[in-house]
Image 1 (cartoon, rainbow, N blue to C red):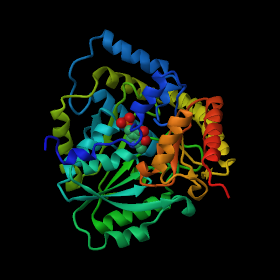
Image 2 (tube, helix red, strand yellow):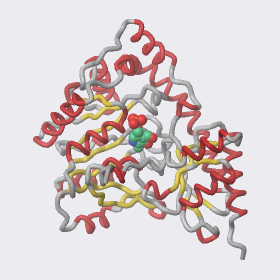
Image 3 (cartoon, protein in one colour):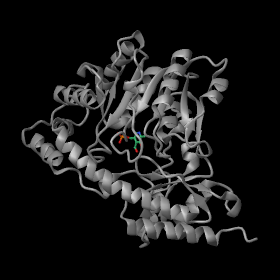
Image 4 (cartoon, rainbow, N blue to C red):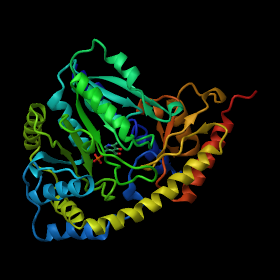
Length: 402
Ligand SMILES: Cc1ncc(COP(=O)(O)O)c(C=O)c1O
């Protein structure tokens, strides 16, 4: 066998129909892409961040940087966590990555041997499973369901982990993609209690922490105390900078696990030399002026909230799907009334929708939740309306006649 067995786990459900979508577009069809959560396709990156990127290039700041990330950026990240969440974070406890995606790869390489396990919450961000499985890890799932108002069921999880050994970490997405919920402070405290009871390292992906429209967001750093944890965040969403994106891993505590993991992540970061250097200067500049950033983000939030709530309303007018109004991010995650439709699976639904109506969305099974699909609510209201009308029309055309 030429390819490795583990490479079978290389997958991104969000992009799996990209080749077909491009082919359809090349044939002259107007394809509406609602699959990738890329705000930069619809909203401009703040000008001052772009200027800082160009300025860095002009000053020849385009060498291999420190593998962990340039100091001014790590200082700016630490200062933001202090200002927003009251966390005394040492810049030395931060590793800058080429997006959270690279951080996920480092994390799993650092922690997972074949047969090790990690707890993920369904619905999850698809790359969590891909990066876990590709190094031989196995997921144990907790569930958040819309019937339960997206509350994470820790009692069921406790039963699932009973007798299980070698569980390395528990990964939460707060705010959540795809379901748009935020985890309450009380639930976060319970998660910390659960992690302590089962000796788990907590990973909290907080990439949407600035895109919250309803309720109040609590960072894991506000409740974790001495429990070992890591925060993942980055510039893709809040800075609308997906093209030259960066992420980071922040491990603030001083326990043995945190210290060992941090050192290992730095070694892994050294293996890939360094993240994009001009982008680091741009990100540092973006964060340094936090009041300018806050002004930019509130404008962004207002635009995104309007589009997201519009899309949710449109979805809920259909007889074939429904979605709880999300509190954050920019995704609608409708549940399909599968019994009213002729499709055997959400995969078939999504692929046929692309072929017949030229609309690309992502199947719920890619997030560990079959029978759903995810709409990226980033385009203008006109485009969203056109797309959701077509999805509805498509459902009617494939409905079970009674
Ligand atoms: C929850 C979550 N984590 C991580 C990522 C990837 O982030 P990055 O662009 O920093 O790799 C995304 C992108 O959509 C996401 O939704």
